[in-house]
Each structure stands twice: as structure tokens, then as C-alpha cells.
Amino acid sequence: MAPLPFRQSYAALPERFYANAPLSPAPAPKLIRLNHTLAEQLGLDAEWLASPEGVAMLSGSAMPEGVEPLSMAYAGHQFGSFNPHLGDGRALLLGDVQDAQGHVWEVQLKGSGPTPFSRRGDGRAVLGPVLREYVVSEAMHALGISTTRALAAVKTGMTVLRETMLPGAVLARVASSHIRVGTFQYFASRQDMAGLRLLADFAIARHYPQVALAPAPYLAFLQQVIEAQAKLIAQWMLVGFIHGVMNTDNMAVSGETIDYGPCAFMDQYDPNTVFSFIDERGRYAFTNQPTIALWNLTRLAEALLPLLSEDEEESVALAGQALEQFGGLFHGAYFAGLRAKLGLKTQQAGDETFFHALFAQMQEHHADFTNTFRSLSDERVITGEHVPDILEGMQPWLTQWRQRLMQEVEEAPAIRAENMRRVNPCYIPRNHLIEAMISAAVNNDDYTLFEEMLQLTASPYTEQADMARYAQPPQPEERVRYTFCGT
Image (cartoon, rainbow, N blue to C red):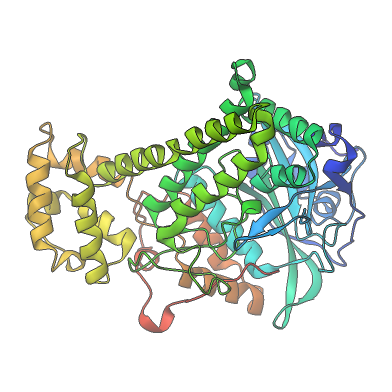
């Protein structure tokens, strides 16, 4: 028997919460990469996971004794339209494990084949999006942003039809749970109040156990999710990350970034940047992410209304009051993050205008988002001794910034620069490099760039020798306009 300390806590809920899914064996599963460090943190036997039996499990081909996967039921708004029946159409929840600190983590396979929720889809993932999610989710973790993690990537040995025939693959990912806003919508849309309450109690116990003893635990739960998401979206915005498809079934109540599809990091600053090919109207553009997060949280509040109070008007009022806190929470986290990125420690009344002036300059000069902030994190720039090319044309704002720094508590420029470099990465997984990495893997079975990107983005705040090209924005001919989720 495999040394896997898996439980299936979600299966303790009634059967209408999930479906048992038949396995879809892969013809020739092959391990691309195992995250040994994460496996060790989870208390999993990395040597066994890399064995033929382990790879069979990670590909969804065969399960060891005691592992009984399931697929979760949920609903959701997709581009603003409600779909009452979605569910894990291509995912299997293997179970959960508890780490040495007592934290519970779920392990899920993504792309292992059709489930009862597949809606005539093949349930498969292709290699490119699997590699993208592996790299981007691990990069987000290294950046300090709450996210699902990548445990393993496995090739299945089969080809999958998308625009063309592509190699199939499976991602094994880890999350504190895979409960989404859409999971609550599933039960609310069916007027299943018992199921709604059971789900809320499960989510509270898993993510926010401190609210169980609150006078109004379900309201406190809603408030906790709102706060977690406000802080998460602020973190996205501070590194130029664009999720791509912020449907309600892609928002986790844990506050973790989940479901990396047509995601990307912005190069040139443009608040209207969109990477998803199907987002024709820019619903999920970079600048819209806080608004959409609040829209999604409003759908969660609507689903929870029956639990907030027996009086409908009171429920609506309580939900409204909770949602009103989002703006302050988001802007508090976002502006605090911008101050840190600019070497500021005190708050002033004109800060918002000051920040907007910088972004206006960046947009006017087509400045690279990541490199602009990294360039400011230079002692010579702070003192005015040097102006790099990327900051040329921004002299009026730079003068105002240095005057603002002089109003701060006195700090040596070298120390200020060091502190800024701790929050302004020099490396992100740039989209054109991800596409080059995917092309090498798909066309040549070459994972050199994949491994290099993982190594580089694991230390995003530290400059590494001979890696300058990873900090460079794409040339015009290298720009990648759209990314795809692989469904």
C-alpha cells in the first residue's frame, strides 16, 4: 500500500455535494516534474510519488488502496451569465493531508479525464496550460501571494484535440480547499438550505474556525472571505498579475488564487490589458479586477442570505454592510503595498493622486510595469545620481517622489533601496518566455526552459547571474497577445 496519509474529508458531506468519478487511464504516463519540497512539506513520500505506482496515481490512471477520488459539484457565473450546473468537469479530488503545523491541504488532479460534470467535454488538459499553471502558481507563491500550488506535472502519453492535436498532461495541485463562490451558488440556486448550511459549516471549520463562536458566524464568515479577497486582489494588482477569467467558479473562499487559465503578468503598463482570447469586452481586464471581485462577492452574499437572518430585509442589510467594507479593505492593502514599493512608510492625503500620476506616466511612456518599480529600487535613482532609460521622461514625477521621500523618517538610501527590492521583483514569468518554454516542451520534448523558469522565479527578488534576459520585456515581435486555458 502506498504511504499516503490521505483522508477524504469532503466525502463526509452528503452525496449531492460531489460525484464519484471513474478513472480514465493514461496510456503511457510519464513524470515531467515532481515538487519534492512541497511533497516533503505535506508529509508525502516523494520517492513513492515518483515511482510507477505514484505516477499512475498522479496521472489519474490507477489509485492505491485507500485513495477514493471524487469530483465536486458547483455552479457559477461565467462572464456574467449563471450556469447552475458546472462542477469538476476535468478534476479529481484525491483527498486531503495534514502538514506538520496542522494545516489541511487538498490534492487534486486537473485534466485526468471526464467526470459526471464534464458536459460532453473530454476532461483532459494539454501540456502547455499545465506547464503554465505549474510555473505561474509557483511564481505567485514565491512572490508571497496566496495561491494553489503545483505538486506534479505528468504527461499522459495521449494526444488531445484542441485547435490541433496536442500532447495530454495532468497537473496535480494543492489547495487548502477547492470550495468556490460557485459552490455556494450551487446549493442556493437549488434552494437547498440544509446543504448550504453544511457547506458553510465545512468552510468555516476548514478556513476560518475562529468565527464559529461568533454571535453571527455566517455573517462573520462572509466578512472573512471579503477581507481575504480584498487583500488577494491588491496583491495581484501590485505585481501586474491578470487572472484572465474571474468567474465565480474561479474564486476560492479561502482567498487563494485558483484556476490559472489565460493568466499572465503585464509587461507594458496599460490598465485595460486583457489576455483571455474570449474576453472580447474586457470584463476581466487588469483594472477591472477589484470591481469584478466585489461583483463575485456580492453573488456569494446573495447565496448566504438565508443563513444571515430569518428576516429577509435584515439579511440584505447585513450583507450590504459587509460588502461595503470591500473598497476600504482593498484600497488599504493596495495603497500600503504601493507605498512599500515606492519606499514610503507614512500615509499622506495626496497619496492616491501621487500614485495615479506615476501610472499615467508609465502608460504614456509604455513603461514596463515590473521594471519601472525595480528601477526605482536603486540607491542611485533614489538620490538622483542616475536616471535609467525606463524612467526618462518621468523627471517631474521623479522630482516629486524624491521630495516625498525627504518628508519620511530619515533613512539611508542604501537601506531604503534594499527594502524596496524586497517588494519589487526583478523576475516574473513573462508571457513571451512562457510561450517559448511551452513551444520547446510541446515541439521538442525539451524542458530546459521550464526548469530554468522554475529556478529563476523561485527567488523573484534576487538578481541572478546570466539571467538578464528573463528581466527584459518582449520585443514587439515577441509579444503574446492572448493565452488559453486549454479546455
